[in-house]
Image 1 (tube, rainbow, N blue to C red):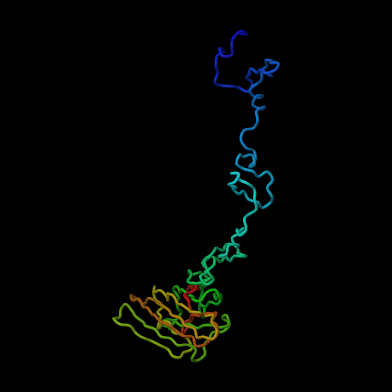
Image 2 (cartoon, one colour):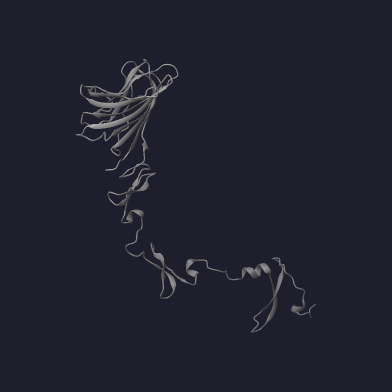
Length: 308
């Protein structure tokens, strides 16, 4: 075996950490035959690849300063550490068309056409222009009361409000359904003579024509006449819109489209009203001319900005 050449030994394709390798040390001087295990051989090998960014052949950044960025330098053909070029943005608000210095949690970037810039705003509450409807409050009447009213809805962010009524029923049969507004958050309701002007067009499925009604002036707005509460009839449902209630020094306007059932007929009323007072409106009240409101829901209001 001692006289056998290495090339003549049988080959192997698998190695174990304890297997031996034949080694000749100092082959150019005083050669000495030795052996080494596979594990020890691997341990003495230099590490392969880069252990740091600067170890890469095309990177020259041995001592980068705080805040520097890796920048390509075409002259030596390598990446070097350099300060951020002037005029570049470090934050979103640094951009010339962004105005979002102190955004609140949950806000999104919204385009403001008036200032030609992106601004941070709550979802569904655009800073200008026409926006989506935003739910603000819901009032549910679970037991009879003198009125169904809402006061916690006004915001300077919106100038159009939609009050959606659902199945508002009366305790006394065949009563007019009415509305008043408040300028003091519902502490009192505007009911003086000549406070409102209103007009409506009334139609029924059992009638070939409509009926026109109006009140000028009046102490309340009559939204529907002779609402029935018998049997399995639904109460009054439908939307009422109120325009720019927060404007001081101008009369306020609104319109509605309500429906109710009586026996086998469906009744509808489309109308508009004018509140004569010029103070800001921050409350609205729905009631029947006699008796209480038995039940009903006012999903209200939904607000949005309009075209200006």
